[in-house]
Length: 285
Image (cartoon, rainbow, N blue to C red; front, side):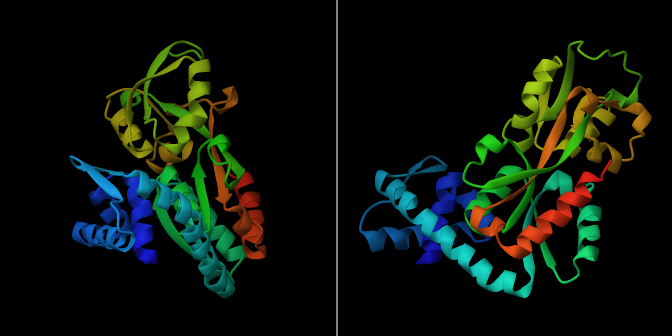
């Protein structure tokens, strides 16, 4: 029954059977069977189809509102009673972080805390937050605005500088504050909400958006436009720093956050991990 309820909860977020199946690593027919089993159990329709998309009925919405916190608590108890007892921390990490400076930071903390086992999952920041709420992850290292995470405890561990990669690395006659069209991350990302206001203040206009900062950087290097990305992405791709236009001195950074449910954040092992990670992150250049 719990697996069926979890499936309905995920479906309420994704809105499609395909995305739900992908997230749960199931076939679409298995997702449909779980939803059908719930509808038989409760004796009423819980979803209705609109083309390829699926919406919850009024009864389905009420059920999710009632059971989602309970399912989340059950998962959290499982993590606390099993993973923490074994010294294991399950992390959801923003893909751009885990593909750039994150691994070296985690390795340094791992050497400092050899008794801790770290299990990593790379996701986009909004997915990390969703899976923290559902109890699948214990800790998240991601970007975003604290205003969107009132139900979670969120602490900034690093302000990562944002930089402009000039198109094709050609010299760019740019003075700070001049209007400039750039390629950058799309609106649904966690980073966008945290950089949008400062971009507007600096008169940087998003001419086109992509789903990942690495894609933005590669498009800029190929000459499709100037790319606005975190400095870790540019460094990972081997871009010479002399070619970059740094914007951190003018207040344009992306905040990197340590996020957890409040009950999880208070656990001694998670507290120790947070202190070690934030101390190391503060030393990053």
